[in-house]
Image (cartoon, rainbow, N blue to C red; front, side, top):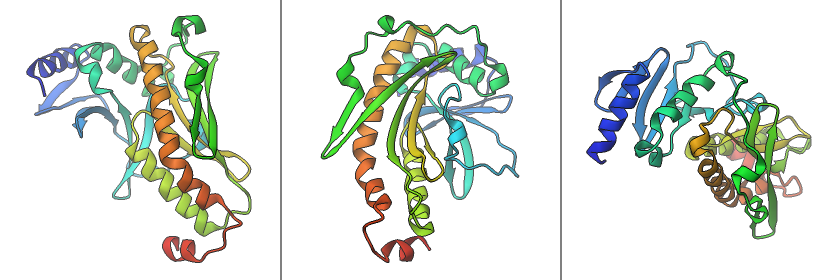
Length: 245
């Protein structure tokens, strides 16, 4: 990675109070900045006895890009930072992450942009893949600015084996895909994906939303066939019971 980026990172993180622990790793309070597959991320320390569902629908509407991921049966909370930010507005971006790491810190003085300021096109919100057509919704009310995508309803008839398979697929997707968070509601609700920009720096907001639209579009095309198969209760098969028991 370019040396100037590391200088920029050092300067930005030092201004915000981060302390360098080792190469490419910094800490501040309960937050750790590090790299993962060339992506800078912030991770937040969680209590050892924390019992939380990483797909809990209460995540919808939470400000910022924070989400829960699972690895080796350990739940982590992280905030992904697009690599292109390194040479631009890193300090502002990390300040946003710090601000939204605890809802009690989030200031309601943040101003939501006007729709005309975003220069968005209607066709960017429609995603089609094979026979599946979905619309991305822009939530722009109160202190919330987010993109949301309803992927598929969760039918009450889904047996526990398919539901477990579905959970496994969604948790894996949440681990893999940057920026977005996924929620799995109760039967009768929907599988949702959200990218939440509440509190984001105004200087990068427009480009960030356009990136978010692209991420959700690619994500839907990558995921939809798999979850549709799992949720199809008319398809009778013991394979789900064998795989997810």
